[in-house]
Structures are given as structure tokens and as C-alpha cells.
Image (tube, rainbow, N blue to C red; front, top):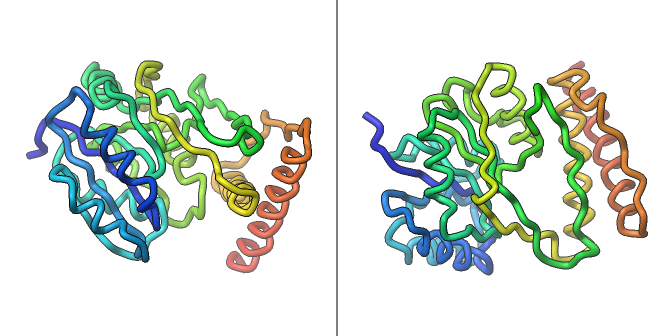
Length: 256
């Protein structure tokens, strides 16, 4: 029988420099019946030592994608409410209690309020996709699901390189899940720190967009490419287009 409480699931790879801030912010929460399950994709830094220094953590080291890692984390969890966040994030002190309260009110999934920090030039407005009034592009840095309902969906699709959270939300909406938003459930997420990581993220976002369109035809029909206002917007658009084209070529070869 699943216990009442919250399991926070995090997938990481070489997030040692950020993990303490996340875990300390979790520890300061006003909710007591919780655990943090950290699934580590073979980090080569001090991630393992940091995670194991906290009493409320469960640690698993295994080669995995982000989606696979989150599925593993859910399998390892002991509680019925699953809260997802990232290794480079920081949660507000009422985050756990707010997300749990929204799930306990009869909702199947909860979208929190994500605020971005870091260098402004690397901040990009998220291209939002709505399905039946629900923003399915709500990121897994601040997302919660009831474990039983998450499992009914089959979890995250491990074939997705990125955008696995969008795919999960789309399937949940199509399955009739009840969604809620929690504006007071704040998570502070960091934008990329340098140009290389900024462009790499844009590339994989483009790759994920193609995967979404193949699995959910027409899902991006009502979105439009945002023509940037500065040089970084332009670079982001070009890198995303390269990722989209790469996915089209790669996925096309696999489908033959």
C-alpha cells in the first residue's frame, strides 16, 4: 500500500555545483512527510557524495535519459504524490505543501509556478502549447502527478530525447486527467550559463519538437515561430531549426 506523503523525483548528471542549493531548499520546506529520490545518470563529479549527505534522500546511479530516470525514480518512490523538479533548481518553502494540497483536493496533476533566474540574454520566452485549455508545455521542473495516475499513462516515453514532459502532459489531457495550477508553488529554475549550453538546449528543443509532431500530429499547429528581437534570439532560432532538421533525418532513417 502506498503511504501518504510526497516523493520528489530528480534526475541529474554532474549537478554537484547546484545540488546543495536544491536539497537545502527542499529541507527548509514546511512539509515533513517526504523523500527526495535522485536518479543519477553516471555523474563524474561529487553528486553521489552530496546526495548521500542528506537524510531524506534515496540515491540511484544508472545510465538513463531524463524520461527513463524519472520513471525509475517513481518506481523507487514510497509515497503516492510525485513531485518533479531539476537538479539545478531551487524550491520555495511552501512548494511541497502547496503541490500536495492541490493533488489531495482531487486533481490528477498540478502545474506549479516556474520563475527563471540567471543571465537575461539567455532567457527565452517559452513557446506555449494549449490543449483543451491546459498548457501542456508546463515543464517538469515544477510538475506533480498522483502516482497511480502517472502509472496509468505508462510514465514518460523513454524514446524522447527532450520534450518528454510535454508528451506526458498531452497524453494526460487526452486521457481526461484533471489538472490544476498552483501559483504559490514556486520553483526557481536557472537558465543556461554560457552560449554553448544555450545553443545546445535550443538544438535539443528543436529535436523534441519534431518528435512531438510525429507522435501527436497537429499539436504545434497553433504555435508560431517567434522572430527574435536580438542576436541571441536569432541564434536560438537557428540552433532549434538545426535540431528539428537533425531529428527529421535521424527519425526518418529509423522509420525505414
